[in-house]
Image 1: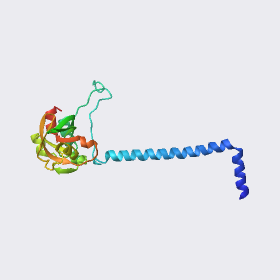
Image 2 (image 1 turned 30 degrees about the horizontal axis):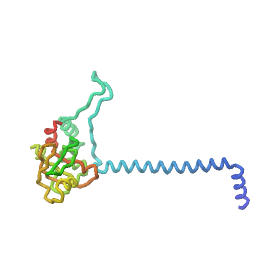
Image 3 (image 1 turned 135 degrees about the vertical axis):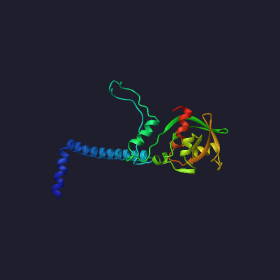
Image 4 (image 1 turned 120 degrees about the horizontal axis):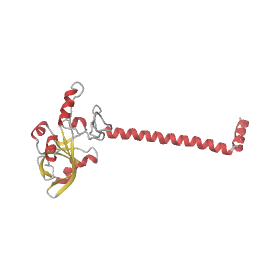
Length: 214
């Protein structure tokens, strides 16, 4: 056994450069394996985090621009979605689609109560929005079908937004806030799902469409 170790030591001593390069290659391979595993786990966690608030049996469709010409129509045309597309989607696949909804947004709107104000993104949504996104109610209610049908000026605020606007008041539901020069009655609060959502508020889809001509 001693002779074997002595022979190994002698071989290493005679081939220092080869030994160094071999050791470096092994160490570099282990390092890259660790980096790739870490990057892979990071991507997995990022995907899980981004999809955690979305129902797994749902999908979103966004408008865009055409990349190719088609039957005389030029490429680069903007694709617009409207209420007819919403109705047609639900009617075309009744056996495969449980619910269809739509969202419109108005960014950077000043929402105020008295002397307090915050800048928010207003989202016009349907009642089934809570079935697609994990919006959890903290108080009051969410947008309902009557709000949609009557185009009511009601709003659902994030609980942190309510804390800023109403300070320590616990009687928030039923009060009115001013958003972009329009008065909305607060009908509900939703709980924190992250700092991004603290800068959002929800209105009836039809109300936001009418007010902002979406």
